[in-house]
Length: 292
Image 1 (tube, rainbow, N blue to C red):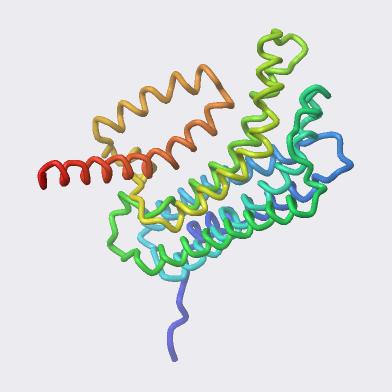
Image 2 (image 1 turned 60 degrees about the vertical axis):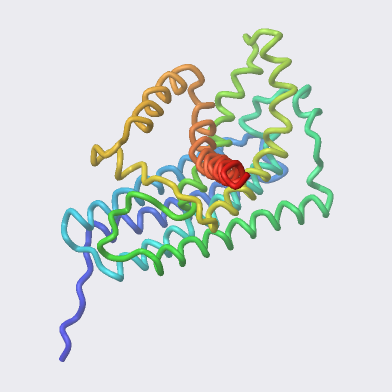
């Protein structure tokens, strides 16, 4: 008789913790509807997605540390990622965009009246659903491609395409940032800050987030090269440019607090494709100049 295959307990529990956080994010986001007076559930859902990212970072390290890597763990990890970084962020984006005016009850009427879109309209609601569905599909394709193309002895220093946890973190950063935006419309805020918030918050909540969700979905299935920040940071493999970026990130976090979260994730998501396009344009110009 064949000996039954064993699976690693600690890495498996960490991976399942990832899935539990993803399910929790969906649960909290689903509680937000037209009636509640608070959007705090959206903030909790976003935090749970980030907690799922922590579990996702730890399970692979735990498996390598205990020397218990297996095909079972790799497949389970992708299934859990599909929930936490595929379905949960897409559903959070839809709920947040439709009900952002309820967020913590801290947006004054002057801001709520400036919201440009009415998602009671069927066409807008369908468009929002399509963006969410495309995000889920791209996340699933990204995870399937990763399983097919990643070999067991891969160093995991770079990714081909935006990693699904980074895409999910970019989407979830906007409910996190609402804590910072809320300070701009607080009772003790200056008139300039309040005016800026009334002009800035509505389009950010209703227009920017769906567009960014669609863009990161496309980047997940792209071939743009992304560094593995966790491995390079904790293995001491940062180059000079990455070290300078890390140093400049710290004062940004100190200055803008909650607003730093979307800024950092958007920078990571979009700096690589912008750099790739710029290098391609420069290469073609150099080629044409030499040909002339």
